[in-house]
Length: 371
Ligand SMILES: [Cu+2]
Image 1 (cartoon, protein in one colour):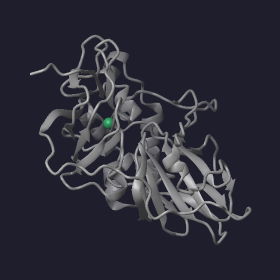
Image 2 (cartoon, rainbow, N blue to C red; image 1 turned 180 degrees about the vertical axis):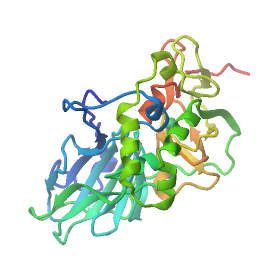
Image 3 (cartoon, rainbow, N blue to C red; image 1 turned 90 degrees about the horizontal axis):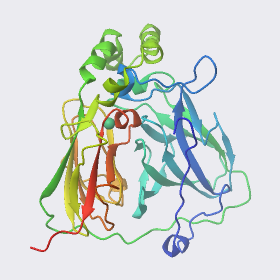
């Protein structure tokens, strides 16, 4: 992703086409791909797997939206639909609009929600997708803004220590034709009684203490607690991010893991039964870092997040379940496609530096034996 492009697959069907949602690409239906980047002295994208990176992930200092810095979109004057992908390596955002106006979440990773969910700030972690509707019938311009995130001190380094405008929208075109429906899609209700947990997925970090010590010594934890940006601390952190030597490959590939081991190209993982309703439990060990856990081969439903029902905008079809701050999630999932041991599915943290340093495991999906 760092060397190439990030893009969207846009999947429509009769159900979504029949709702009258804004659907004129680039006019009132706008893709928004969010990525943070850091440049090296030669102007190339900087990347290094050093002790800070394998712990907190990529920390950029420049925002790209659809590959551009501070882009402006001229849109219809009306309802505007933003199809948002967090295509960042590791960064999470809290998206808001510059004039603090409300917006309405209409879809998550795997499709439309049942009803629009009205929000003023939307957390989105790496790999997650949300569609939002903005009422721009008044024609007033607005910015999409990222508010500072909670719990992740390294992700609050400037310019992310204050509300940061990401892109500007100028709804001064012709009147929009899209509408905002009251109800969106039928989503099956969850069963009253869920099956017992059949698979646990524990995200693990084996070298986070080392990174925490470096960041504590640099003054980052104190700065995060105070809520005030200190240029001396920022300079020390930037030095750690940009100038710490890269780890040897073997150390990098074994810095993180799932269920007791880093990802292995030779050992196989576990098996899941085909076409069977399952509950999986996702948790983190001791690190309290953010892990947007992504599972291939399925769309699932989050049944609990930190032992509570998920917020409404996360109650639809998902393929990323974010946990952080010692939290956990349970998901209700069914795998409709088989996968062999030789061509397995993956489950991985969508913080790509976690994934690329071992936080990934593989699984096959096979027809259960009759019993
Ligand atoms: Cu992670």
